[in-house]
Image 1 (cartoon, helix red, strand yellow):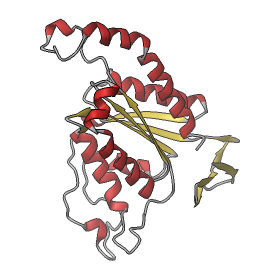
Image 2: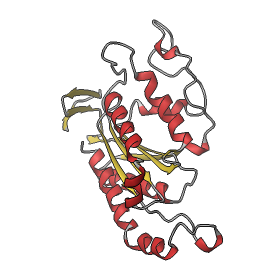
Image 3: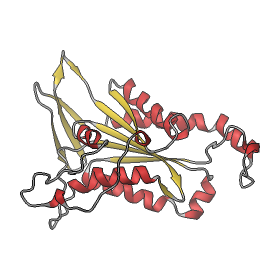
Image 4: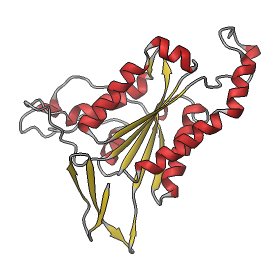
Length: 245
């Protein structure tokens, strides 16, 4: 990414793999804005911890950061009304639904990077994250010959996925394939994307309280102590890269 300072305005030009950002300056300081979207129902566990580490990484490079927990909001996914595709319509290129995530969708138009995080349930991202992504991406998809994008600029996007299974079972299940398609959609309509996969996460404080013979609790705890800190470091570095891309 090439950063060029310009007073009073903020523009973005995409040229092949290069993103050139023109930043508005306040008091001589460049401020990049990064939002993390937590698609987990838990606000203090694996996915949230990793998202916060990514935000710490972005903040270490001077970004202003914010965490949003999707489970705090009442909303639904795309209703297939196609008002975002209506020629000369008032909602062309934007979701017409007015609900509790409308302000979040509008805010994303002005950020420099977003980080989407979700645990994997039954091989897929959570329903809340799926509904959010429908509302975020579909309005910008143009039904023309090139399936163009109406998103006002190119931004950097990080994706963090957490799994209860280990690396071997993840490869066996092929769960990565639909997640790679998320990255394809984001790069097509929003901007450059990068994913990290965190496996064999620690799900319970006390495994003895739950029917969980599929897992080795001691192995899980050992990995939590030895490997998860490395995963957190990867998330931190991801956050740093997102404001450099």
